[in-house]
Image (cartoon, rainbow, N blue to C red; front, side, top):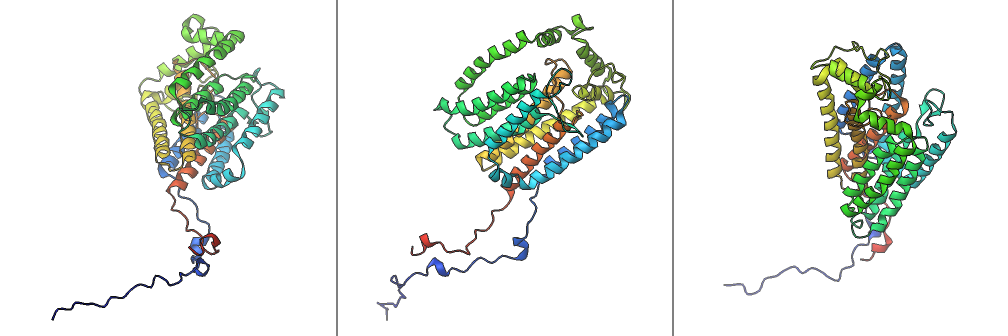
Length: 406
């Protein structure tokens, strides 16, 4: 017999739903409640470790007559820098929520103003004497300016191409920062950071037409700096024809050529440089790359360049996979700051760009440069780790009264 009717259990649609007030809280284990360090990017950490090791080696090797003193101080600077990197790699985003980026710019502007009233070193006002080392505010500005621009662009991303007025605020902040730097006087750092800011604007969606107009507006400023500061014009002329001024403005570049060329394929060996014996000025700072070419040759230098390319590639890769606009822009900006500065310094040493006082990251002797470069690495590690970390469980221990009867 065929069953015409079957009993089915009907759902009581009139039953009162259980309110959120009685939702059981999510219970966590002690291990989950305890603080756990973020897992840093191993490849970026490895690149940084290699740079620190070789930087110390060449600081010792490139210092002609006082190598032990320079080496000890550089070890101290690297130690402080590593400590800053480790601290920021775990806490940067937490600090970002406390200190607004514009506050960082105010502090940076204060430092750039204070340094103008300090005693000049080598006829320029670029360092503040803190006793155990000289603080260079322009190195601090590299980090704070990138943080500010990344924060601003993350809020207007996707709107820049349609509304050029959104470019006014970051450009005004950047221009004021560059103006204070040029009063030192310092033209190399503003040009370096100007390139970084333009790249960040382009990545954030700014129109190429607007960026071209911006470049046209900066040309008169550069020409003014070259014409009214005669020593800069002499540097430019010596760059175009260093042989004609080998005994004057082109002396440093010619000595750099001798160091680079005499290294050959495999170099003279560590510590065997001859040009560092007071022939090449600033051999352990701005022109340390020339000494590296002389001692380890073309093959060794190509390995160093490959590591910088790896750093650039890894930084861009981390910026591309970042899910947060601020994280992506900040990783990109800091990576470009380190990479462009490195390639600018190497190009200067071999005569592809005019000589400027821009150090080689991780290698050139100096406290401010090393500490701030490692601080940039720490920030990148923190942002990359926060992107890779699993999302924390939402805490449901409290009652959400808005959704209580839904």
